[in-house]
Image 1 (spheres, rainbow, N blue to C red):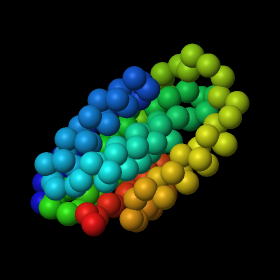
Image 2: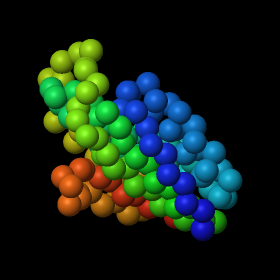
Image 3: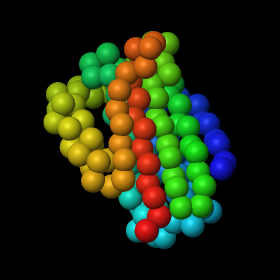
Length: 132
């Protein structure tokens, strides 16, 4: 099993880089094109859900921890922020609705999803996708 950890600035523009890294890891580990797309979308949605803190702004950083093996893709996205220093450029009037849709998408695309808050008060999403 390969373990990779990325620490990402909370800026939304870095989600594209995470999508590319996710697709590469899934491809190397034997997932087909449809499964790769599912994993990519789920991880990107998890990054958005974890890093967005409503009107407070975005997390200054978050972590994406990958544990991948042939046929099993396990990833945890965790808020690793010390503060919400990244200012939003727009108001977040629809966050609850958008967040609910993102969570529903993640659950529909992955085989197993766990959400929670760690001992430090950081929210996380753990997702598992198994090859067909």
